[in-house]
Image (cartoon, rainbow, N blue to C red; front, side, top):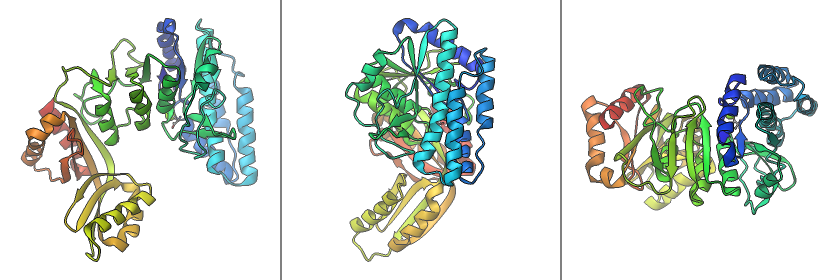
Length: 431
Ligand code: ASP
Ligand code: MG
């Protein structure tokens, strides 16, 4: 049972978590928690400011004391950890540099503190629990600080967790490399932690508890009528993630999928709602179009070849350059002597500079990508025309439009100004 930052965001939310865990106590859950909402960002600021000579941990300390007070727990419960954090921040200030390794150590306090708070809240309310630091419990990773990759588990975590008294409350987001340095799995990595732990303990189900009623047919902030999708396949979820859906950390579903463990996205605020169940094999009953996803802050970068190279070499060079920047692309349109890629806006400037050697480069920024996710058999057989016809009717112009590689998505880029209208239009057409 993984609870995200908002689900453990304050005393009231944590009380809710206690009830949700109590309700499933007989299933012997392992709980995984994020830092309280906003704490990871605050710690990031602490680390950077410390490097510039100002080491102030008091706002973070105050926030935790307030939560403890709200839960009627001992306000000194976290004093030892907060003192360590102060020492660490002082160390960063003295050295004057926050390396990725040190930043991970600073960030780790977010989850370490929240795991202790949640374990104490559970215990105080009759659900015995113990806080567990993932890096001590065998969550081994490589040494890529800031985005560490997990190493194979081979039974360590299950063995460790089986010795814990009561419900283990494990820190999400954290691991340790072989030398024992604390690592983090990348922002929003707690879902990934939950999936890795779920696989390690051979869980029957991995529950991701959030503050929304599951995965929606579109982003409810754009489309008020969007509704939760009761059942989806791993492939649908992977498609959603490829369009930037933040419902689940993209890496999180992979271990669950590989081991055939059911994933459920549920809402701490309405714990009786079914949420969304994601399984390997979903039997019928699903609409042909499953969701409308979108991604903002997109730039379209077009490179027109100088034609001094064969086409394949031109494409290889363009994608190698993007790879060197670790820049994800999609959708992509390939022409006879040109290629257009949709990329994250943040990469646009560097992409232009680095692709200039390959041809004439043009950028269109303030774009967004929309993806319609559904059955390949439907989209490949006229479904794509239905999508595009809606846009034609509304006079929305598109670029990089087409079927995705597996036929189960239709994607295109629109001007950011027309995004909301476009998503609403498609949502009302297909749902
Ligand atoms: N606390 C971490 C973050 O904010 C990990 C997570 O929330 O999943 O990125
Ligand atoms: Mg968080």
